[in-house]
Length: 138
Image (cartoon, rainbow, N blue to C red):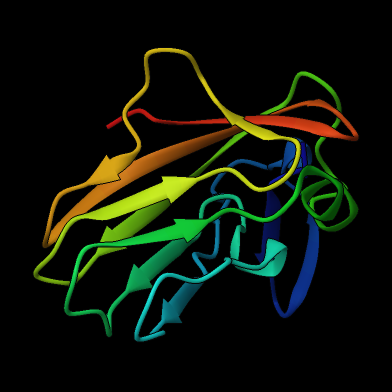
């Protein structure tokens, strides 16, 4: 996993070296996806700790996650067995369904739908460079 960073007077350093009186901070990346139909999300949009805000659709739709190979090439701080969380915000008035790209599978028994006007937490887990799993956990 990527280390938390301390920002101090414009400089950054590893948070494992926090001194008394300092705090670690995590920046949150918000990505707006406004496609008028289901789309394939990019690996760059799947940033750990980020928020994907989905708008622009008027009928039930399916968004597909990137392929496992693209996730591995982009999320290089994650190694086999690592997981990351990101938030999916379905800001539409219809149900959003998530599907896995090539090499990305749903954890057995997990839900793949996000209710209209809801936010959920998505967990991605790297099992190998060519295999990832995903599940909606809350």
